[in-house]
Amino acid sequence: MLIKKTSDIRSSEITDEKLYVNRRDFIRAATGAAAAGAGMLAGSGALFAAGQAAPHGRKLDNVKASPLSVDPTKEKPNTWDQITTYNNYYEFGTDKDSPSMLAGRLKTEPWAVVVEGECNKKGTYPIDDILKGVTLEDRIYRHRCVEAWSMIIPWVGFPLADFIKRCEPTSKAKFIELYTLYDASQMPGVRMPVLRWPYIEGLRMDEAMHPLTILGVGLYGEVMPKQDGAPIRLVVPWKYGFKSVKSIVRIRFVEKQPVNSWQDQAASEYGFYSNVNPTVDHPRWSQATERRIGEFLKRRTLMFNGYGDQVQGLYAGLDLKKNY
Amino acid sequence: MPSTTTIRFVFKPLVFAAGLGPAGWVIWAALTGNLSPNPLSDVTNETGVWALRFLCITLAVTPLRRLTGWNWAIKFRRMVGLFAFFYGSLHVLTYAIADRFAGLDFPDGMVAWSTARSFVMSVAADIYKRPFITIGFTAFSLMVPLALTSTAGMIQRLGGKRWKALHRLVYVSAAAGVVHYWWLVKADVSRPQIYAVVVGLLLAFRAYRSRVRAVAPARPQVRATARP
Image 1 (cartoon, chains in turn brown, blue):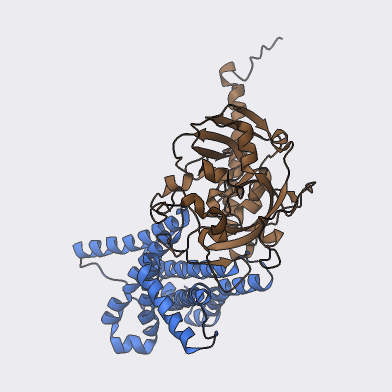
Image 2 (cartoon, one colour):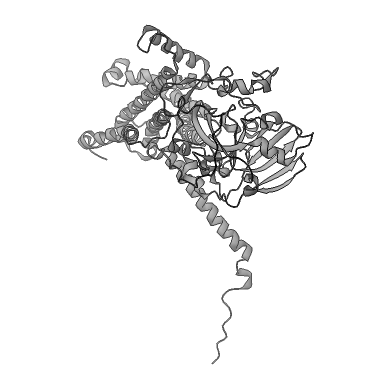
């Protein structure tokens, strides 16, 4: 006897391939969210507040010393552990230790930076291309966070000006906008609407061209740890730390003054310039002193973070109380 | 329901030990290098959050009793409330030392009258100038009379009614604590939000109960000292 068995599954019940793939994305996203949640919970307890120091990376070759560095015998650089476990990198969570625990999933290879806007050499620049021909320098800089703590950080990088020249900005380029990577699959923190993503920062052209302003690609002579903004980030040492955008994927030359992410979030508290200034308090806390990480007694915060001699000329005639 | 003896000799010591847990945890983490590179900030944050958590637990006792009938929970309330005050005190102390004292200039050396004077001035100026400190200090100050009048003798001296009225200040303290937390974060208010919801619900429960009671005053009240 022939038993004719129909298929148990109607074709309408077969999961569409697209949905199936989405399901994987969903699981990945859910895992990510769970990990982020766990990270945040862990971060809330003192036990785990120490974070995880970054693994040591490849040593960078031919790094030159720079006269623009602070004297490391007078101001001792903070340790690798401190610099890689105490980070504000909100794309990986708002706790200081979350970036150290979650940035491992950031894919830094391959990496490219898109250049667009008012310039002649628009296009996509792979990181190897960006680094071709540049001379890397050790730049030991003071780093002052807007939260009134500070570190001494031995960055490795090269002047942003060198890269800008390659892009040949036009006369209309008055400002530069820099964007951090925005990718929820790698960055669990962006699921929280803490800031408007992607993270954007901006500089006036003369600030961007200043010899102190660098694109950082390393720390302590090694490739940049992920929690510190690998593979390429901005470092502007006379401004509060949040100006120095991490993991840059886009650079745009523009005519109008950009609205940076923190200004967008709270314009009364964070301005476009954000120069370190002990005489202009944050509306909620004082900027007159700072705690150097690793020290008990606070230090007096220096005007322009101690870089006044080099940069005050940029702001001649500008009311720094209004243009905070 | 556990017997009075069990509560006194088993559960109370357990709750006491648990209450010391967070402090022990922070000390252990500090000694073993398990705090962040900014340990003073960790200690300030942890003690503050624990003060708020213990305040929430204190405020949860009455709703818990009303909803479950577990009236013995009242026997732990004073201890939990005093732990809120304990962590609040540590929080204020850490702030005063790590934030204020450490930020002073020491023109005559650290041990000097000028140090004491500028320390007091620095704390006072900060309380006056920074709204989140003002409200945080309010939250703490309101706990002081409550801690001072927490003994059985003081309850008797004040009389139940007046004592109860005074201790309603804890509602203001908890609410002020939440506002303090909310105002101090930079952008991520997710944690203060949680405490706002918890404290909000605990206070809403009381508001709702008092309205219900006002409408139906004949309803018998559960006595605070009900025994089996």
